[in-house]
Image (cartoon, rainbow, N blue to C red; front, side, top):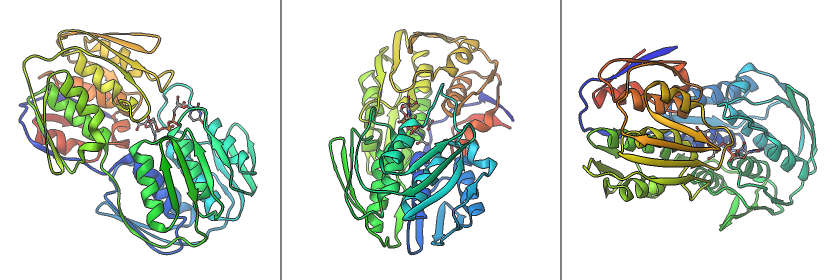
Length: 412
Ligand code: EPU
């Protein structure tokens, strides 16, 4: 699928930020742990969510999704070989494995190897090592993962604070009454959101620095939960406003975007906070910057490709160093096609501004690459064409309408 995007007539407007993709996926998976009905609000209507729900329905779960609200009725399903093609369409599908392990005393199922954005080699060895450490028998072939056995609580010490591994351990042990410890855990706001959801079902979770201790409950009660806002969507719109004539975003807690707004205000933009909203005002003198993308509380890696576009519109040389992924660089070649002066030396993206963006035909390789191409396209009054635009819909709800309301034309 391709989209044509151009600047029509940018106008300052207010954008309501949707619920978080990276919170919704584990929370949806976690809902199957419940022993009573669960209601989850503020779930974004994006393709990753729709696919995850479709997988759970095929597995036999009783789930309804309408108007950003998900209702899950607890069901016991038969563990078997879950080999639906959809599993390969997103990485977050592997949270179902953690939830299945958590749900049943004895695990005995097979699952297709998950897919997701191609950000270089993305192994799942930390997850599988954690399952093994719990005492489970894990057998991996090229296509499938088979998990068998009884689990027990233990102390996990992660090699890096992996978001997905922390989440899968939380899911696996949230009904286990003995305490599980995760050292060097990820503490991204989305991990904390999942912890809050599990707490509202009854699991006891304590977090101190990077150590999480989980004491599960055999019976998890139902709850009515609101998923946090999408801080990467918020960052995307703040950067769009920074590239144009400012923006106001609502439905946002400033704490969740603090790292991004601090950077934007450090380089010269004016940021004002009100309850639940943030306004960015364009300023004349913006400075180039040097930053490192790091696990929370650092500047998130997911915003890196978007900051490359921002840097291209600032006089001088900016450097963005990626430290989380080894090969998250698919945006570089495409942004060059649009006349952005960007190079990549050992995961340091060096951008020299200012560039005049030329309208081009470019290809999106992953979700944040497509968002970066979208931002760059919004800087030219002539249409650019982005191929494989469906990758954008994995993580941005109502993106066409939101862009149109700002005077950016987006035609599918
Ligand atoms: N890693 C391994 N082995 C593993 C797991 C991770 O080597 O078993 C490596 C990764 O390759 C990466 C690093 O460890 O180099 C950190 O990966 P992490 O596990 O923290 O990332 P993730 O759980 O796979 C989630 C988000 C990503 C986001 C990262 C980092 C979801 C579904 N995905 O991925 O989101 O970039 O955390 O914050 O929550 C996006 O939204 O565009 C996106 C890619």
